[in-house]
Length: 341
Image (cartoon, rainbow, N blue to C red; front, top):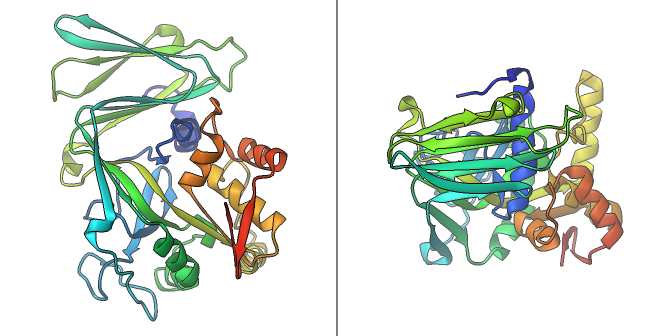
């Protein structure tokens, strides 16, 4: 459900991702329970982000013809063999995850927990989970990185030519981790970037009864600064919501050039999009392609977390690229592929 100021709806997912990525859990999804598949997101899924939703194409760990790969598989598909014992599962207690600049306070009111938030930055984001979150991650990332570098060209041909999806190679993600919950959730983004007023806008959340859902009670002075979403809705109860994803992204300079030429011919936006539409991982890919002679660059959410875990600000594309160019982190080129060390 939405707060007011819905004219900014198209950018809510971008602001939410930009703000909450700095919490260090991976890439947050503005629409955790919205999916194009009937199955929950899982390790090995290949897909891309659209409007805060992960659009699943297929899963690389499933055998050819598996019913859960309802879209089919790329040409000459060979699955990645991963034993379930190579997955690490942990339980994150239900509660709140907030971006930097969010002040959290709580009190008891009418036998119900009342939690208040105040955003002291231009943008901020909060997610509240009413049930425990199951975190699944691959223990050894190496085979996934090698598999992505080897097969990514078949993925983009499958997506663009077989499924007719308007997607670029650098947008594809191979999931190596995800955070799932079966309970209700609430996600909120605060956006004061359009106003000249001093930061300090806030909003309050009321949990009336366990399991009854989250009600948003904004302060009057904050009502134009936020967007709010919660779920799952009754029609999506069969889908397990995914709050965060972690995975590999790639950029191939030759494929990028062809995608840009195609975009020019069709008079559409280039494959890399604008700086506003690109995420923080895209900044790492750009840095690696600019600094190395490798044909391809690959990065993972963990690269971003290791690089910026002490930076208590929003991690947008421009900020990350500036930090990379200033800090000049080391990278390695193994054959045609470059990655951060």
